[in-house]
Amino acid sequence: MLKAKHAAGLSVEVDLETFKGVLEEKKTGFIVTARAGIILKKYQYQVFFNEFIFIVQTKEPITIPNEFSVIVAEKIHSPVFVGN
Image: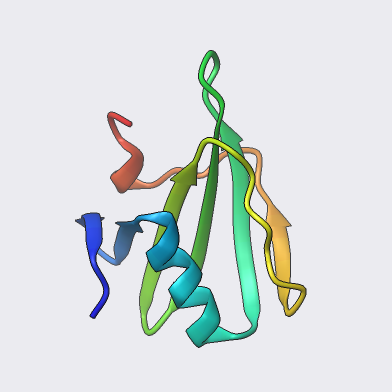
C-alpha cells in the first residue's frame, strides 16, 4: 500500500521513501524534475506509474537511477503544490 500526503486528480504527492518505492517498482521510464522556490529552494520530481502521477518535493536533490531518462523542466505546475 502506498501512503499519499496529498492528492488532486491523478497527481499524488508522496514522501521520499514512497517515491523511491515507486521507482523500484517502475524500474524504467521518464522522470520530470524542476527546481522551485525563490528563498527556500526545493527540488520537485514526478513520475507516471499505474495511471497516476507520483510527485515528491525535497530540500536536496535525489539520485535518480540510471534506468530512468530525466526531463528537466523550468517549472512543474501541479495542484498538489498549491500552497507548498
